[in-house]
Amino acid sequence: MLTLCYRNLLLYFRNKSGVFFSLLAALISFILYIAFLKDTIAGSWGRIPSHTAFLDLWLIGGTLGITAITTTLSALSQRVEDHEKDTANDFILTGTSRFQLAFGYVLSATVISFVMQIIVFLVMYGYFYIVDDLNISLSKIFVLIGLMTIGSILNALVSTIIMMFVHNRNTLNAIASLVGTVSGFLVGAYIPIGILPEFAQFLVKLTPGSYVASLYRQTLLNDDMIDLFPKEAQRNDFSEELGIQLKWDHLLNFNQSLLTTIGLFVLFLMIVLIVEYKASKQMSKLNH
Image 1 (cartoon, rainbow, N blue to C red):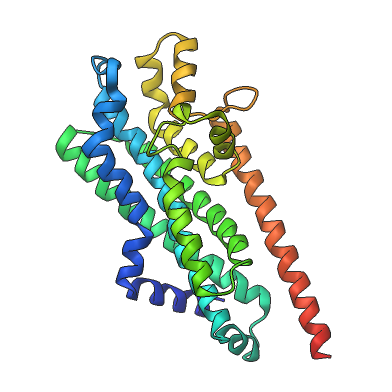
Image 2 (cartoon, helix red, strand yellow):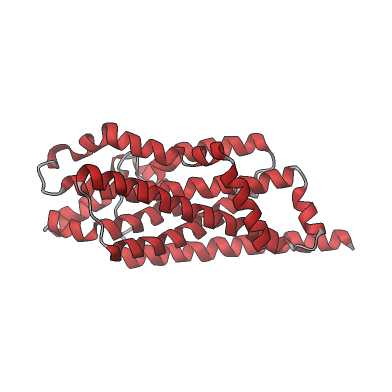
């Protein structure tokens, strides 16, 4: 499994254009924010102290959420290519089990997503540090690193399930284009979630990546929210509109968002295990 993971990592990082396109949605989010969204979102509350740093942190959280989604999907495109070229069968003939094969892809996608999130974070933080004098405490950075790990694993499992239904390069390209286009909306990076139509907001809450983005934003922004909005009602409305906290019957706090994310991880892990177990059992019957 580790050998397969290492091989997938080499193939991913050697493909420079593939790496670029896996980060394209995150890059679009960053450029749109700098060029247009920063002044637009600030709007009437631009006179609030430290609003620039607040918006910078909000964008970092959303862009990290996009990166976790698009890079895992891009990394797992190797799974589709291997199945299309029957390379996967060659691995199985060498004694690699279906579980080792499947989780070799998951592991490599997780590592790739984590590394790319670190790179995106350092680039954005460096830019905002120079331009806006942004500072993030070490304690928050350590929490972010932990959340990046969880987000990478969760999105790798989600992408694995998506790739189970993709069997050729044409479908893969279509899926990749679709996910790259909508990911910024699903985590509320291109447009604040509260501005979206009600049905679109419902779809956002069905997206695992939106909970990861919410965790990033709560980690980066919760301390500032109390200072900017002393009144709880005003703070809650603003938090809901900007997707800092997701709302079902109530706004989910950090612990509730984290538990939801872990619950989704367990759910998708079970789905992958069940599908791979059934596929392995079916293959055993055919061999006998």
